[in-house]
Image 1 (cartoon, rainbow, N blue to C red):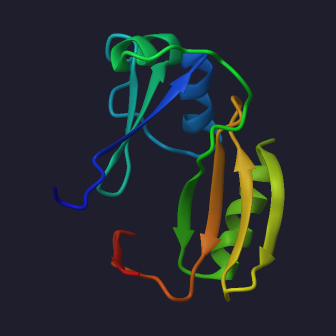
Image 2 (image 1 turned 135 degrees about the horizontal axis):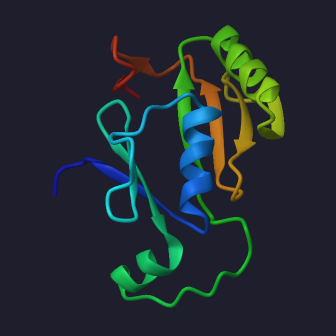
Image 3 (image 1 turned 180 degrees about the horizontal axis):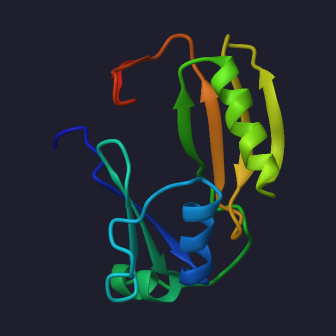
Length: 143
């Protein structure tokens, strides 16, 4: 199988509120102004972020939705081109009232990163990795 990620789908409790969060706080544009039959899509650089009601996602996947805890044992990441871009992103998100769970800081391996949470406590790492190369569109070209 090819090493590829096409969709990243988050199971959400409140689709309308989560769609508004990514539109208003992150400044992202949904693929369609109205949701597609109960799912919202945001085209990112080369992949699609989907927001889908958690109970329907669990049913679709054939698993039980237990709703235990808020930490989902995963984070999503947005890599920037510099520490300055990370700081600018955090300042903009803070001004919009986004929850900062960890302020940006230098890390032992040479990078710089912090974390924010959306309104359903999905964690986003916003980072600068000096060892990662990205193309003009922000796609990772070398790790």
